[in-house]
Image (tube, rainbow, N blue to C red; front, side, top):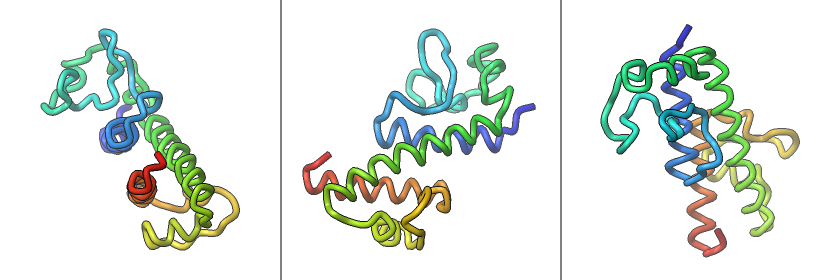
Length: 144
């Protein structure tokens, strides 16, 4: 059974990964008429107009992970967000000789340990904020 709230959360994370950071090799979604649909609640051409996913995408949506296992779709999106952000954070820290825990504290005000998966302790919003901070700082220094 579909959990629309989880699907909407997954699509919000997809937006962060695919649109904000331009990573076309990621995101949770489904194929429809040769397009990868990462936000079933918007039109496929512009992504600006709301649509009813069942009416717009039909069986492609109804058979997608969004509908068949909304919780898994959300977990997959969260995992991808953390993996992509962690990769950029690690590269940024190496290039600037910084500790990841210090960058996380500055970017989102959270204290984490240096061991283990530092981003697992953060909310999705904090991870997105951290990723934006790292991208902005790297872009300003001309190293991305």
